[in-house]
View 1: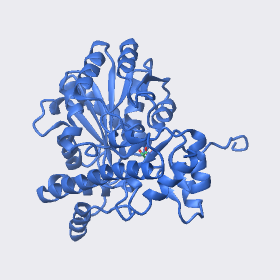
View 2: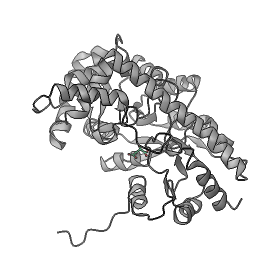
View 3: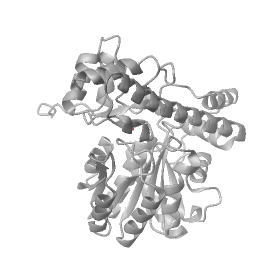
View 4: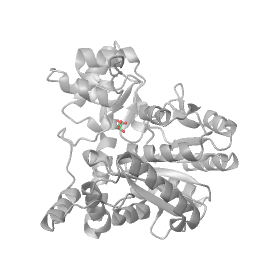
Length: 395
Ligand code: LMR
């Protein structure tokens, strides 16, 4: 049965980590995957998480099955974070614990595929590489809407709106709520208002991916777009992740929320989402949900989290400026746009050949599309990276 199975290519992002781990180059730098590292190049264990873990360990509990839709306290805390504690949409919104942001997208994709089998999916051009793969595997035909303007180094907003306006009613539109991955270019508040009008007028189904809440401006400001969409009265989905914001990558802790027309519709939608979960992995794991709930609901830990998240955000911003300065020192003067991008990534404009040369000749890993993770730079590796970029650009 397996004899004709072809060898699949490596994952375009996580496959880079596999290649990085196998690389003997002592100077190697992994700017591939979107993982925040601290100023010393280490993956942080946030203090708020360490304290939450300590509290949980002091009061150990047996590990029964969680409900199919997740730890009730977690689900409630996520809903309040995403929509606001006194949001009018909460009574018609359901939230399901998910295996990270990717798991949330997949529950949503499987649910939509059964609910609206004729629908197609539009993702931004470019988008996180797994968007296309995930929605395609769920059975959708996946197209793109214009997003990145290479010449202008920013968003092709007119192109985006024209493509969304031309999409048939019922089309699922995947939108990056903040910190667009991979480009690092977000829409302004006015542009978001136009997108919302276009989506509503065209009867499109927005699926907001919010993997980086807190990495652009703040939890509150970065969540504003989701709240506007939710309160506009249209049906929508939102995938939330705590991988980055709580540095809980390996716990696979995220959530899918669906804003429905009314409470009755929400109950029916929840019943279907529970079938998606049950037939995939039955019910979710406990630990990450307990950690996140403890941090989100304890005022002291939550304040500490907000502070630590701000520290990560500020360090990434500082590294953007440091990268631009280092590139200038290395003779590259046309990459100042890196300082205007937001989130973990920079779309560097480097070609595939240059990215391959960066990897093979210098041990600097970024995606073939030219995305580099600024959140993995620090004072010890940034100049090496700048010299490597200058070398592959022939500067
Ligand atoms: C990324 O884009 O690097 C992250 O979202 C990690 C992943 O799962 O791809």
